[in-house]
Structure formats: structure tokens, C-alpha cells
Image (cartoon, rainbow, N blue to C red; front, side, top):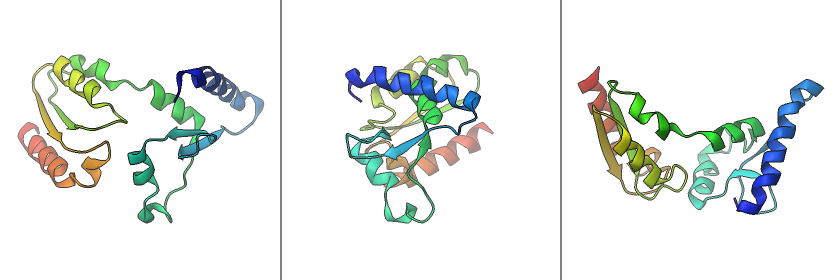
Length: 148
């Protein structure tokens, strides 16, 4: 999103938070859209491709509550990484991720305490679910066998 659109988005979040007090349902928005005039949580080409693939047509609706969008926007798991120890951590990081930005994921890994492990893979945010599923799955299985 462009910086000049942030104020309007924050105003929409605040208005949506008042909806339950007025007896109204939460507002919804699109999960993905390539139309810049339409509100959407994600616009990246990889998100568009993943969420609109043919297999999702019958089982998925392209909408999300504005409240969920607000929560996702403020989600920053990296701040908790140093506090998880001594619980083992496995980081699966796609090297061209533009949704959970790669450099932030790698910084979270650097800040995490041991025991920790890092597995990187090519591709974007959805690669671990698609083209790199075998790498992601086998890494997780190995990790859990070792740490459980």
C-alpha cells in the first residue's frame, strides 16, 4: 500500500471497530485484488496467483474481515523470537518472500536464541506450500523427530 493511503486505512479500521456497538456485522474486504481501486489485503503477484488458483474456486471466497486485515498488519512475530528459548525453533524462510519479508525473517532468526535451525529455500511466500513443499515438509518432520 502506498504511504498516502495509510491514514484512510487506519480510519476504516477505527470505524470497523465501532460496528459491533452499533449492532452491525464487521466490514469485509477482498483478500487479493489486482484492481488498485478495490480494497484488498494483498496485491502481490504471488498472493494473487496462490489465492486465485483453480483448486480454490469451489472452496474459498475472496473475502476477509477488516478486523483480520488489521490484525495481520500489526503481526510481528520476530519480536518474540529471542523470548522463546529454550523452546526449539525452526525457521523455514523463502528467499524471495515479499509477504513475510525475507530480511525480517532472517533478522528474527539471528535474534533467536539456541536451539534454533534455519532452512532457506528459493521462491516467494507460497513456495513452501507449492514448489518447495517437499523441502519444507521433510525439514519440519526431521526437526520434530529430533526435538519431541
